[in-house]
Length: 185
Image (cartoon, rainbow, N blue to C red; front, side, top):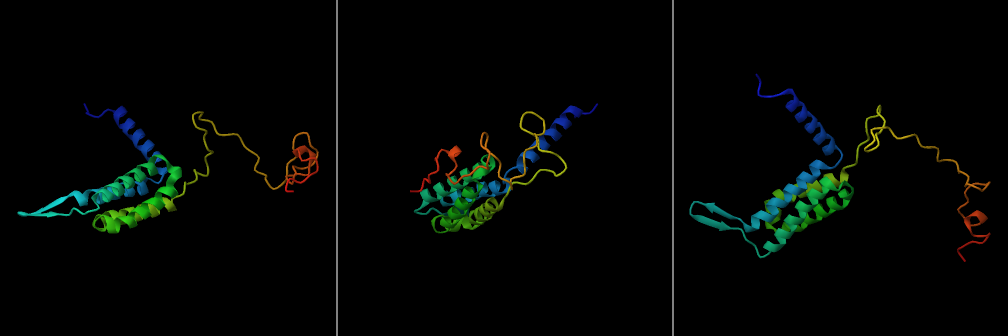
């Protein structure tokens, strides 16, 4: 008898597919790079390197600044995962924090954190949500049904309910409440 049951492998496959779908809807790799960039930037100013009996302390006077930059980069990385609409702000902020980390935090965590933040921030700014498969209609959340068709013809002006002419946005149409007067003067 096998240790694995078919239900367990199917559940693993389902969870893996769910994670792949979740990962594909957001700038996952950009968030991971920004998150990982905060770790060396925050760690190295507080680390002591042991070389035999020689202890090399890499502490700087701006250790608190390094810690703040590192924590902010970790928070920006997590926000890229869970708040995908802030991707441009988080990407630009990650790039700026990477540049600030050069003089503040031992060359940005010995260039490791600097490069990760720079590349991750650029990936976050450049990321755009992908379109769904062309052959399948979009599915409304929670219902499992495809949304109903909408009017895609936006080239013609539509009439307002109760008014015979097109929707005049100049303010001279009595239906708009202007009574023939312009509101500019």
